[in-house]
Image 1: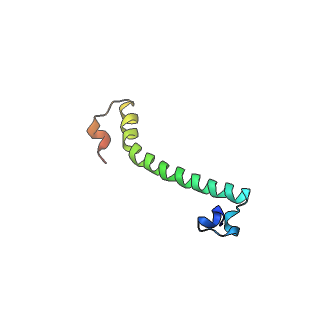
Image 2 (image 1 turned 45 degrees about the horizontal axis):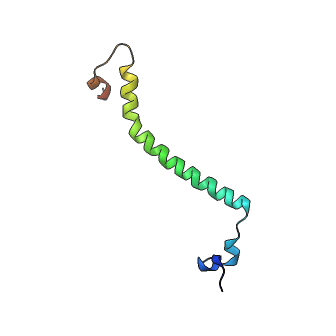
Image 3 (image 1 turned 60 degrees about the horizontal axis):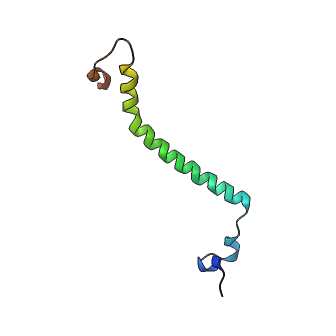
Length: 70
């Protein structure tokens, strides 16, 4: 009967992963996941942040003044 690793299509050498290699792989995956989510948050959060900061400043600008590039 074949081992569980061989059933998944991995050879016996691939099935055994050292703790350091496993930790490095997990760190890479989490870093990638965090950067992708940070990009989405920054993309959708920038304009609301500009509006929030602008509306809490003195003198109070109109919304059109906050959103115009001039």
